[in-house]
Length: 457
Image 1 (cartoon, rainbow, N blue to C red):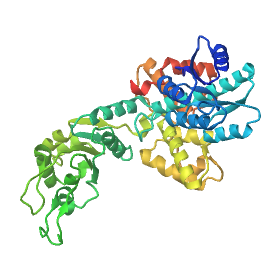
Image 2: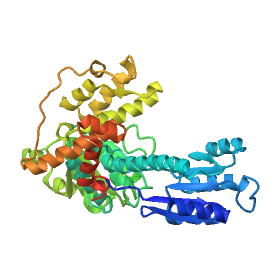
Image 3: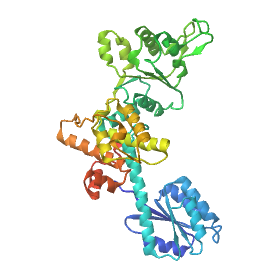
Image 4: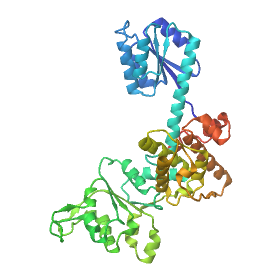
């Protein structure tokens, strides 16, 4: 795995001590920057982004006091919150050392300086910084876009498609089984778009009665039908300059499909009972769990509308075809709902993880959420057991879509490593134990697959 660069900033106004520290820590693997006051320190943090800061509290213009030193801690952490600040202070200044910790400093060290002991403090701080950096990099791989947890290559490709679609105004249709996260991906298109601050308006075509659908979409004028006591703005007009999400488009009544087609072609609407054309500028994203091509052949979906909404089609794989994603998603949801519902940290037992990985999840992500919520409520301890999930018949066999053995092995290894890291909360030693390999072997495998920046390829 790519390593965090070891950069140390020394903030010390005593030239002799500054030189001593610089000489001691200066080696081929460490970059040393020095500063003698707060402003120089802030400039160095912005320019070099040091992982470690060794800082004296007595800085000019208050070298005999601590006010400038405390201010320096606050300003460094405001710019770079993950910086490990080690405060250098006198033996009789214990209260100042504790105040520094309260302000966010990582540790403190009493003068006079024993370089051998200080080495241990700095190395410990750097190890923590390295772990946090690895955690951040691995999290990017597991969550390529907001709301999507995946270690699966096919699903990461879907996420890359979503990011590309967001930069255009094409009409895209998301196709996948119920519960696969179609609305999450539709929202991701909107949130990655240049007009993300504009409205995102969703309508479920299967949930609105046919008699009300036209009014819901296009709005109506006062008195246009019985009960129309006031003029109403439809979903299309509400989404002006933003995104309109038409969920379950396959359930739209055939008579209304013609009106939807006209809107998509002309980008204008007329309210029920109205005469004025209203121009709209928006992105349209559709979703369905039905086979639209078959519906076209059967005559239940217009062919011209099919080609209009399917300028780009995104096929979302079901959870059972996403490798170890079920365990990743379940673990993510367990952290979330345990914090919300029980206020305590919870984990899965080994048997529960195996059950999650082997079950076919016909209800996809929605079913995972349902089972995890159930487990949080019913678990007798902070360890979720198999019976807490309420899964009756786990299916042990997994399906593999890859035929090439080399590619299949790579895909399986990458997904297994990402899953182990996520389930061990990015503790590399624990992940290695879970995978049955040594810690150096795991590092070699992570480096081999360039996993720190894989999500950005």
